[in-house]
Length: 272
Image (cartoon, rainbow, N blue to C red; front, top):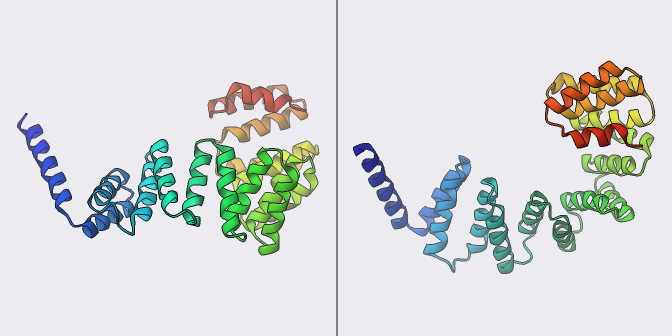
């Protein structure tokens, strides 16, 4: 009981000392905790700084930082509110708009994210991150020509950009041009190999019935990540095309064991 009382007293003293700090000391403390990824403490010190000097010229930046640390804590609605207030104060802050767009993606608000990335591009038409993300969102919205235009703009700005190759790889895949998708994924895998690129190229190989190539990509990806459920789902489809029913059932079960939902399994294995 005494230990609990002592802890409570120390907590009160700590908060009191924090409130007594100067504005710049509070900001420094917030930056210190952000550096240590102690988001809850950083949030507290930012809030205290905002309360101490609500009309500071740094208020928009502090609100942006507050939104970011709230986002890391899963407080998405609070983060959205603070990003939006900060943007009301500094409506042309590109980084801030981009951060809110990214938050909208976390919240599955695709149309609002699209609008924010479009606003970024109004302010800076060469922002590759915004072009890439808007291109992906256009794909999801079935706006194929708009998507292609954004990826082409990236290629014009930076011909060897990873974002251009990956954007076009997804674009060709979504449009059924699996050979061209494979070309782009192959460039990515050579320069920046990843499980995602290997899995996507394997899926394209499966669509073209190039089973040995698909098998090689799946095997390489599983070597790196043997607990990736989607890779087992890909291998199940490969074995289905080879009419190896026992292997299909084994891999379907492995896919489910590693988190792939039943509906996703059925949809993937039986799509045309």
